[in-house]
Image (tube, rainbow, N blue to C red; front, side, top):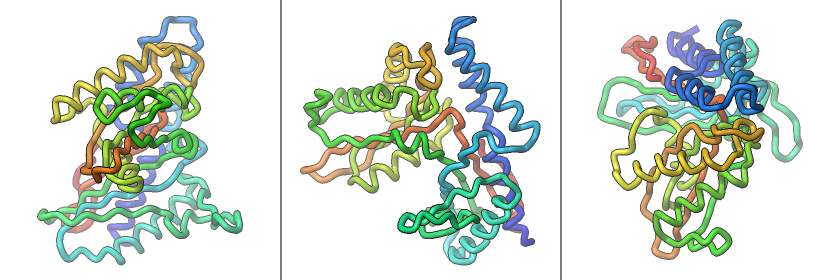
Length: 292
């Protein structure tokens, strides 16, 4: 097995079975916010036990290991076809080992490929940069949370949202309210203001690659992120929709330019099993550093 494939395989294993420190800290904080003896406290305790058991046994945190999304930054001249082939081989091995569920279904026939390969699976996103090292981020996004994502075209009379940040706030809170914990809350929201329908959703998922405890460099977006989390946690939806004080763990917002005729707000919902991890590779394609 090549060094690259070994590195990718370990990235998949760790992403599937262990949550990064920023996520476990946020979950612990949410657990502390739920009054003892309540359903919300019980749900957060079960989530915490699930995290511990999965890490100890090196088993998936959730039965649905989700869509497999790779985000790769590499230098000029990197062979993307060869990299994709090694990634696909690692995905097959990880599926055989049980770190990934057999999760890729032909949309026309309903037949499961059995190895997580097929059109669009895994999803590969390559970006060239001016560094020599290779930065690989992996996100495993389950179907339950993917189902409760939402996209709004402003102005939206249903939620009273105009083409401004107040309108964006209303959209994010409406998406949270409509989800009602169905996305396995407490959730993390990635949001994109602008773009078109495709790039908006794409950029909203990229926001989920940020650390939960980072701060948005744009002051208006930073303020919006903090205020939406605080307001969402007063809605009473709580963990798994059982009621409580922890409906969202974080909101991460980005913006893309848009056409004058369009103003989209795209919301990607991530479940509490916030499975994303990243690595830097050295010149031998071994892991030199973990990024979360």
